[in-house]
Amino acid sequence: MPRHEDQNTAIRDQFGKQAEGYARLVRSKADPSFTRYVEALQLTNHDEVLDVGCGTGLLSLSLAGIAKHVTGIDLTPEMLQQARALQSELKIGNVDWQQGDILPLPFQDDAFSIVLTKATFHHLANPAAVLAQMIRVCEPGGRISVSDLTPDPTKAASFDQVEKLRDPSHVHAMPAEVLRNMGRKARLEELAFWQSGTALPLESVLATSFPDPGNLERVRELYRQDVISGQDRLGMSAREENGQILVTYPMTTLVWKRSSAAAN
Image 1 (cartoon, one colour):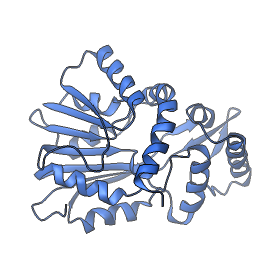
Image 2 (cartoon, helix red, strand yellow):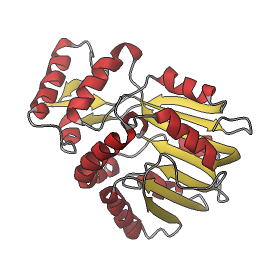
Image 3 (cartoon, rainbow, N blue to C red):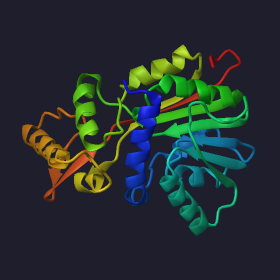
Image 4 (cartoon, one colour):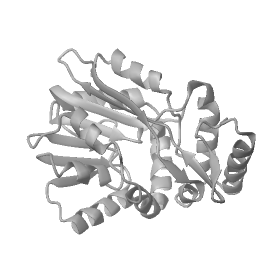
């Protein structure tokens, strides 16, 4: 497992390069579960929301249409530059951005009524410690949510292998039940759980990737072989359609309620 500081360096390197392409990719795909997400969060116009690892800001800005205020924090300045540009384009005022580390989170205890993160835990050296920080800054009775990549347990090792080749900032994607148990251990009350996935062209994903020299073609070949075998060894339902390979990243979303007994 990498040290936190070393992993931060890898994240800044990768997402500094990825920022512009990643912003285009995520905007190109509507989130079909967004309404379900808002309902599970019990989001209202009274909520102060913290988006941990907010990236290019699409989720923060989407939630800002309902919430009282949203704060987005991210380690990578280039990602926040994309977030600010999108905020200006959409003319949304009730969102603030903060550049900085998320371990620890630079906010007071009980500062937010909703604390969430999406597609960050698989980049973290110590996701349990970050969840503890999310609990700390969430008020009792508030909601906490984690959405992340969650491969089939029998395919997690192969999933991690190909993702580390594609993106050196990838650490480990936890199977859904492992992520779920993390909430249980923290004494969070589970409010919602669901799994989803959106098919993406492999080449669109690779266009946002900056692997070590020589690894891009290795990734392509691994996916080609997975399609040919038909066995889904990599856990991303790779298939060929109209001459291109499509991959589906398995995602799990959990929403919890923080009780006064929750560990932090």
